Amino acid sequence: MPTTSEVNRRHFMATAMGLAAAAATLPKLRAQNGGKSANSTVGYGFIGAGSRGQQLLQHLSRTEVGRPIALCDIYSENLKKGIKTVGGNPEGYYDYKELLARKDIDAVYIAVPLFTHFEITKAALEAGKHVFCEKSLVFTPEEVHQLRALAAKYPNQIIQVGLQRRYSEFYQVARQMIDKGMLGRVTHMQAQWHRNGDWRRPVKDKTLEEQINWRMYRKYSGGLVAELASHQIDIAEWMFGYPPVSVMGVGGIDYWKDGRDIYDNIQLIYTYPKGEKLMYSSITNNAHMPYSGLQGIREVGEVIMGDAGTIQISLGKGMWYREPDAPKVGKAGAAKENWTAGATVTEAALTKGFPILPGQDVDTRDSDSFIAKEVKFAKRWLYNKGILVPEEVRDPVGIELEDFLLCVRDGKKPKANLDVGLNDSIGVILANLAMDQERKVKFSEIETMGKGEKTPAKKRG
Ligand SMILES: NC(=O)c1ccc[n+]([C@@H]2O[C@H](COP(=O)([O-])OP(=O)(O)OC[C@H]3O[C@@H](n4cnc5c(N)ncnc54)[C@H](O)[C@@H]3O)[C@@H](O)[C@H]2O)c1
Image (cartoon, rainbow, N blue to C red; front, side, top):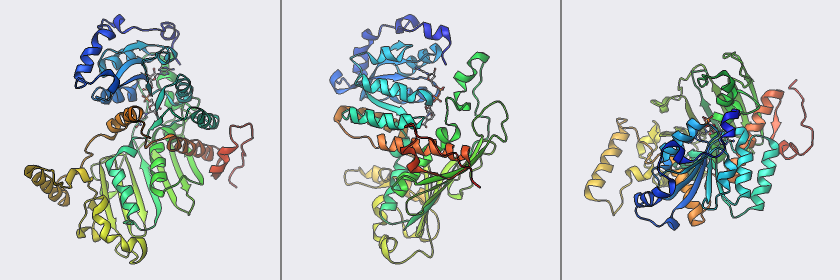
């Protein structure tokens, strides 16, 4: 992937870019961090300062829990930009092994292309670091098994995956509503991530095509399933309460015939242990949002359906609908008195859609000032009238990144942990297999895949 000249210039000092020496700026950074001592903040490294990496670094530049010690990228432009974005003059490297050798780094963020996630995660664990790795966690069946074994070998090191919806208040409220029985028995989910565009990045130098557009090629990428569906496969597992038992699907390269070898449209059906289904669609030539409750949201969303109600949800918006003919007994019937526990709702939600409101935004507390209570009351009124759309109190990406540092600092366990990440990756790997081999793939097959056993290549008859 790297050009020869990039790789050969292995060790890249921040000073070479005319920035002040990293050591000289550390006291300033600590001062910005509210004067905390170095011990109360986690020293971290960052590997892969590309498109996603820059977004993560922007969030990290605002945290007080960690301090950036070093950044690594094989591409000098991204490395320079990343150092600038995060601030604090971390040292720059071209070789991640040199970054990992530093003793003053406790934890690393990894935001490189999918096919290198495992290699770098493995090296980081072996170097004694805690790891945050972007989704999808691993690329191949072999890597699923190897990462599980590595995690068992290093039980005191945290592994967190970049599935930020796990940190969203909207999704957390949706999960609580399911727990309270407000949807009754949850049996189906629909999810889409539709875009209208070729999904390509501009390439000035043709020799860098695969390096820059790695997503388009199977040797580096899991295509739409890994890059988009992985978020929603995880939501389905979270909302149903367990991973799938099988997947089938159809994919094609039918619109963008431009040399890519990943599918440009996919349709998947996942089945769960009690017969629950996730119907999934990702296409790349129409971005319309068909879920009526998600007006104002483009491209991406999910519908969670139970016998007592429905939730339509995306990052930043959620609507709840009560089934008019919901069962009156059992969990759904008993749920009414619990309506206010997870989300702020009213009787008006009996038949028409009602916004899901993350509690912190509108729930008044005794400690709130008179003004704060009034503002929350006004907000609730505006939401109910549909005049104001509730928003995440804080971007879940910022929360997931900081929570990782807090897990490292305080010994907490991450929400988006190893099992979440591996189940998600299995969901990606097997969906691609199901489409390639045109058959229904059982999730149990992963246990023999990548262990020297042959994968059955039967086609649907
Ligand atoms: N959680 C999310 O919502 C989300 C969103 C976008 C991307 N992602 C994930 O983030 C990851 C990166 O995606 P991207 O869009 O930023 O890709 P990108 O190509 O824009 O960036 C990858 C960066 O990694 C660098 N790199 C490649 N190999 C390297 C190596 N061996 N050592 C150091 N640096 C290396 C590249 O030079 C580049 O700067 C992917 O796994 C992707 O799925 C997650």
